[in-house]
Amino acid sequence: MFVDSGDVRIATQTFGVPEGTPLLLIMGATASMVGWPDELCSTLAEQGFFVIRFDHRDTGCSTTVPPGEATYAIEDMATDVLAVMESYGLPAAHLAGMSLGGYISQMLALSHPERIHSVTLIGSEPLGWDGAPLPTISDDFLRHFAGFGELDWQDRRTVSRFLVEIDRLCSGTANTFDAEAALARVEKVLDRTESPASMFNHSSRTTRENWAGRFREISCPVFVLHGSEDPILPVENGRALAEGIPGAELAILEGVGHELPRSHHREIADRMIRFALAR
Image (cartoon, rainbow, N blue to C red; front, top):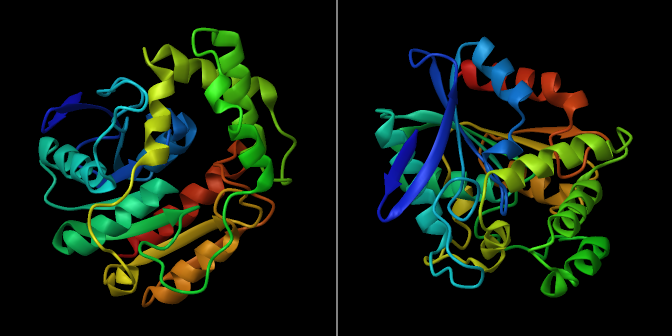
């Protein structure tokens, strides 16, 4: 189903029945809804959730603008989530956000607390962090992204290799990297958009408002799930979230990077289910 958010159309997909407990899955920067694995979504739905995943603007089948021409703020991406909730008739829901999706989830928990039952933050960072600097993206990633400007986006094979390498760099040591599975996911991503380069508009998006220190004011139940080997937002970011949000729970996935590895789908789903359904 497509949802209108102002002049933007957001593509959505559901798992489970509408009578289930509503759970919105919010992916990270540059990622479309397929970043949430089908298996994980189905497992959550089988346990009674009405799962909704969607393509961020500039990804997948949602509205995209040419690379470098985006003017929206991250707050506008949060408004897209509210538009999805409105279209499905949800007065409130549980949220699960990964990376930037966790950042957006924190915004919604602060700006619309009456609409958020709980928040699960996966591989995310504190909204408006105001403490000592936290570790950030690894040097390997910075070197890889240095070649972004020279990438020929008309050459699908080259683009596929570039995106698969991102998946490899995101992976931890808990599992051997599955290049074939990564390529299949990347091909699905490319099949679903006419402008794959537009996803990287997210990398230059900033906030419109001053959120300094605000994450500490979140009052809804919060579960922080973080990979011990996250190379994008190292685990110290997850610990800072859990320590700063009153009552937040923390679980560290040993050997996991900035990813949702298939080997951990059941564990991730079980943890999310136990947390959300206890609310």
